Image 1: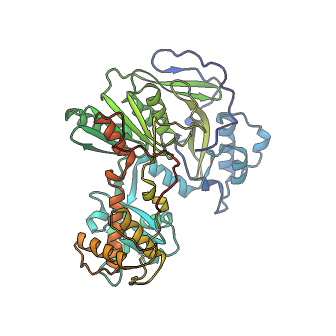
Image 2: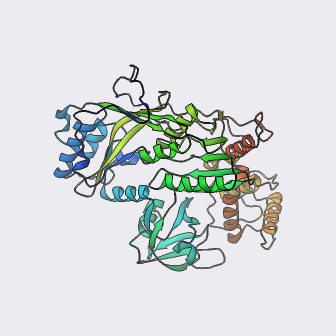
Image 3: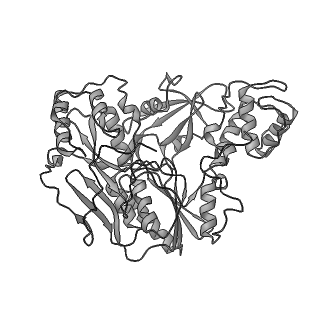
Length: 507
């Protein structure tokens, strides 16, 4: 949860009474720089704080400085002394402005614009770090990566001959992405191959949907909203239409990990579910805007919204409106607590500048910034034993033998135990019970069951464990939502929910 925005103007006075529909208090004297820039976006998302560190010693051109100075003086959420803006550097902006206002280098600006558009040029695969390895987490459906035959768990060892050793996921992404129609070669280490396999893949334009939907029990709809980018509301409306055509009357909206995004996408999304009346109050330095819903008939009888500590900003706009005025409950962990609105300004150099211009309050005027939203049912997503952050890395760089010890053995034991295989050996010790568990796992997976933790078995264990962990059965928040919507309101899957912050046991 972020720190509250303490520099804002007082909000102790009662806001002006609402007028019907969408009320706007005129913002006089506020010169709209939108007329002089090619494009600006009203944002609510959270961004990496590394942007403040200026690791590349970025310098800001004089032309960029002039525009930055102008928009700060005209539009920043609080008044700034012009004398403090005589010289503008990355570091001076960080010292002067709030944590969500900063300069973005041109490469970061490009990535951000791609993220909010939901489109990029590349191969269409999710990648992730696994210890010191970079692996394919999941190829996107019908993508060049899937068509080329890339599989979850494949290790990327090099891109176009450049080794990924010591590089981050972000570094790897920049190497893999490129103009549509060009070719990239991925060197993949895969079980059963002694040397890396080379995949030559032609990049293409990739469209990423910010919304995923499915149905549980043939009666409960599920919407996962990953971010509020272009077309989020459009995708959601289509899913709603499909659900209603199938007779579905109950819905789960999953906002976990949703960092926010475009302000108006968050508002329009809220208008699909929140009944007629206010959705959010946005307070600028010189006035305020109330965005309202015009919804008559609510599309679902009952809704459960899932949130966590990474649900932020536009996701919190909806969650706050739902808490105040929705027909259902919120399940999960307290949200991030970002109640401010930024505008993203493209600069002449190709870089960008993100500036906080407003804060927002819930329909009932509850403060979100620095506070977050508390769920009705406050519980962890995973059982403490299954917390991914406590998962030991499975390095896959040797074949442990009976009687040996090591952290890689402990990592394999941890995964096997969590999936239900019985191991009585001490953590990190490859004893007979560990050998029997490995043998049972190999048999279950159709591998040769000889109890040796070879490379193929370790890679299969890694992939199988990820699939097991991400299955609905391991998601306590989701199972609680399903249990609630099935009509069981007094308990949660027959067990008490594990409260936020409970200590881990039996690690």
